Image 1 (cartoon, helix red, strand yellow):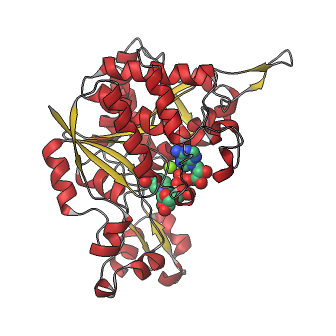
Image 2 (image 1 turned 135 degrees about the vertical axis):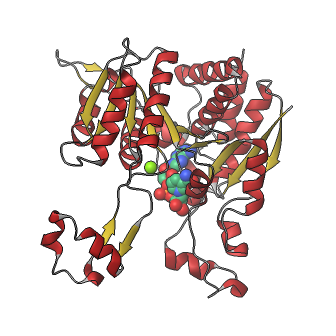
Image 3 (image 1 turned 90 degrees about the vertical axis):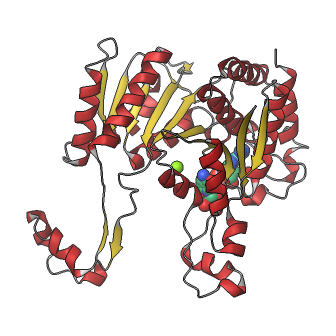
Length: 393
Ligand code: NAI
Ligand code: MG
């Protein structure tokens, strides 16, 4: 039997992940779940939000389901460390970013597909003055390990860094800025990673019948990094004559998001641009309660909803949060390990619950979150899971 590393993390991550496992079991997916420690609790007690034992579990079992974690700014993080760990040089870093880096989970996949009947779906004015609901079905392939999120940055950069940068003519205009007044982030793109994300995107488009692939960058300004992303996408595109490659700029893409989102299929982007576009598209199909994702490397893959730990809802009993983003992430895991039939049954059950419209969490009713949403007609997290289970065929 397959073993899945279950990493609930913090806050509502614990709630939605346990509901997802309940659904997976009801759908007949047979697996052992081993628990992986991750998150704020382990930062506070061990000075490490991603303990080595969790890394070891993933290295052994390869597949992880992740809920969400809480993270806080540097100073707040330092204050919450256990007294015996204070001032020992521990520095907080995000464990999910850590996992992506450690296992080189360089392919992030974020499908944004509208479910029929979801009251949160984007609508727009049609030419005849009516209202139309575009059938959004975009899948963002975000380069997950480098780009602007490589982490190579400084405030008050060391002298050698300044010297190196000054070899670039455009650095002249910053010549007189004191180093302590200078903050620098780097956008690093390697050819290998740019090619990999493009290859995975085209493979996916081909396999799932998407009608186009778009590389969304800004090569007219970011000539080198975006230039390399676009160049590699073009090379890969040559192998797929059936699938046209479109090239858009990130800014224009955000405008077209609401004009013609249904025109886009698979989208390739660098880390930060992919982060932005995937949130943009997710907003058209229901937002955080529906946004699922996969982080895939050559060996290990971790599946997670894109939402965070929503601490303000952590202790609400019963829980009110929408577990669908976590369910859809679990379906991506099933697809990845070849359990497509179970994944399809779960997705169909979710689609049916949404279409029927009887069971809706507070976000689907556009209510402000709080304990009172239940009396206003919102389903609890568990009721949503039950409803999906009841529609499994
Ligand atoms: P968040 O995603 O936790 O929550 C933002 C708001 O979205 C919530 O207040 C809630 O109204 C709504 N929401 C989120 N998930 C929902 C769900 N399943 N159903 C219904 N509504 C939902 O982001 P926020 O508040 O900015 O951050 C809270 C904590 O989560 C922070 O510590 C942050 O660092 C962390 N975070 C972790 C992420 C991860 O684990 N991958 C991603 C984003 C934030
Ligand atoms: Mg984001």
